[in-house]
Image (cartoon, rainbow, N blue to C red; front, side):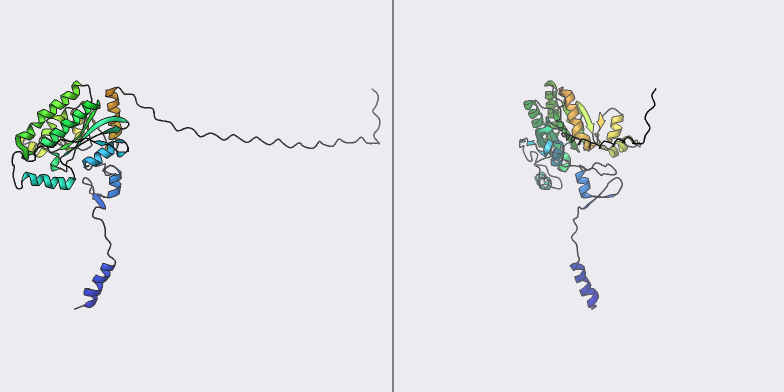
Length: 324
């Protein structure tokens, strides 16, 4: 036994071992660059150099949009947990339990009410971390509850969509949410209230085929995947190569499917500006800082009087002036 290498060295390594957090760095999915986790979090989960938009959970999204990170949570109705007694590799209630433990949410939606750049709004956010943001009965009820709250409070309704489509574990009951949410959008239009949709990465399937494409204005985050079927399925169906950037937000804007592509850091100001235009609300005058009072200049000291120059005395020996 080599006691130096097997006993002393491990003890020295243990003595100077440092505990490094696992999430100290984030790898950019586009460039592979390692970025400090705190820098990405402070930049609203956007990689500073590449501008790649990472996914945000629903609570982070609401905190980013509402003034002073404060809002009123809208209570959402409960629905039947497992109406079809669905089972694949796992029981559906077990999948729900895992998703709730992972995200801290009851389902894929959060709805809040509060001021966004001083404009009162109702915001609904889908969380992709909860079973891919899939649309089920709970999500449908949450969307309709948000629309009803907007109607009751005469406020605009803003949706942040992120979903893989309808939830297969609820079968036809999940597909029934597509016409139900469409009717809720019609309520808003009949009441003359703005309905704005922000498409985030990804927004696909039955969500795209219903309420995510029925807004008065459609905004998308850069690089977001937006469509019904995925590009791989389309390529296999038509047996043709799709163009570069197909189904990305920039491609859809150039083809008229999206009105604008907005960086996440400008989203709050952009949504508030659009709502003011649609609601005919003037931009509030922001209080201007009072100018500091200028100090009065000190009175200049009077100049010192110079002593008078001595007058030259007349010389005694000077000859008298000649008479003219």
